[in-house]
Amino acid sequence: MISNILYDTGLIIASICSFPKILYQRIRHGKYKNNLKQRFGKSFPTIDKGKSKLIWIHAVSVGETRAV
Image (cartoon, rainbow, N blue to C red; front, top):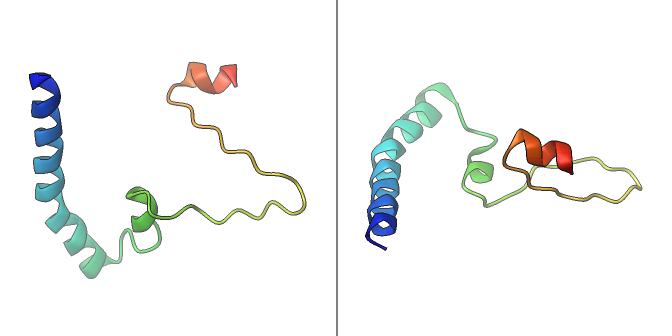
C-alpha cells in the first residue's frame, strides 16, 4: 500500500519535472509534434487497413508477442 503511494507520487513528480523539457523541445525543435497525443493515450495512429478487419493486441514482452 505505502509502496504504491510512493511509486505513484514518484511518477507524478517525474511527469511534472519532465513536462517543461518536452514542451521546450516541442516548441524549439518541433519534436513530439505528431505523436504527443499518442504518448499520453489521447489518440491512436491512423492505419490503412483496406477492407480487412483490424485487431489490436497488447503485449508487454517478447514472449507474450510470440505467444500471440
